Length: 472
Ligand code: SF4
Image (cartoon, rainbow, N blue to C red; front, side, top):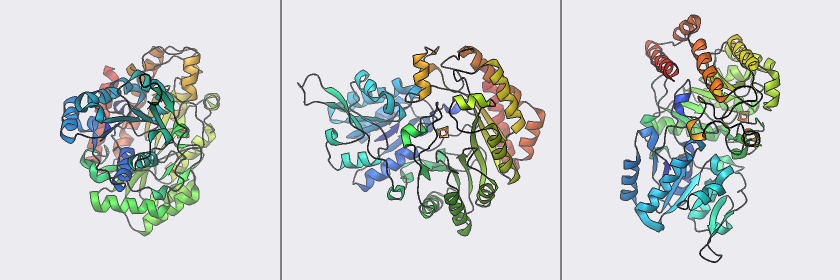
């Protein structure tokens, strides 16, 4: 039984781990990591059940009912930092309901950094996984002992029997040939609940590549997926797209590579294949500002891409350097211009609240964003995720001012050297309101909607967002 526990709507599969309601585009993505694990386990002969409780609007009662009716041998929970304490209660509930025969396990970036602490704090948690876990779980299902399995954190019962020690085995090697993985078991998901807020159509996520070579200090991408980028072949990605069309009727996608556009040849081949097969898709992707140009943008547009998301992060080059973004303001301007020239919309993500942030850098960042004038944007307050360099700095410098579970991208957990967490939270709220309420921006967004249905969806999303910002 693979679960997103009923502890809140978060991006649990994602390096971002953000609360959905903290985002401008409030979209719930399907738990594709769990679905991929499910496919691997099913191929190995397991019976698998997935439940995304927050996305289904289900709570603890439904979880307990599922435990009683399914009686799983194995419960794996998807943990995020902000809800970790509640997430681990899912292990406790499984033990109380099913007794010791159920093995409880946890995955997620949290386990990467704080897995041993979690095992110490929550005795009902039997196993933690770190790194890429598909092959680890497959081997476990086939009968390999935890003690000899890479990528696990487990209780070593071989000591004196009363005081099991917690051991963390080295990580499992990353999967070099990603084509070797089965497609996610979307047939085990309720795909009707994962909807594009723009069009109202079903939408899914495809992982085309894994890994990121950058070392942005706030991001756990490299810690989770490695610093070298691995790619599925374009043919394999397109085969998954065709399966989504044929089996689930899904034609809208987010290509979730840590940086989808990094390998130009791969992007161009994938886009050519989508065009050649006349797949008629509507999709978006993540990019870095130093990995896009007119050729890529034009090919992506032809293949059905409509929006590209960039982590532009700051309008201050000094801040970009300090956060180790490895990109320049000029590259950001060029990337946004290339997308606009080729008819692609741009979603700009800005990160504020890193330790060196000042009143001045905030102003510079807001001005830079206004100059870039993207179609969609967010100011995300940097959240110290365990395992990141930012987390180490926040702990070492005593920057925490709020509990991690009371904070997130909309409410600062830590102060900077100059600004309090309250000042950051309030600055973000006012800056977003000011940017959203520009009459020209509202008019342009509605004019570009392209259909009355999309315009209505934009208005609904905008009204919800404004209500949240005004009342927060
Ligand atoms: S470029 Fe930076 S923010 Fe983006 S995935 Fe890589 S490490 Fe994370």
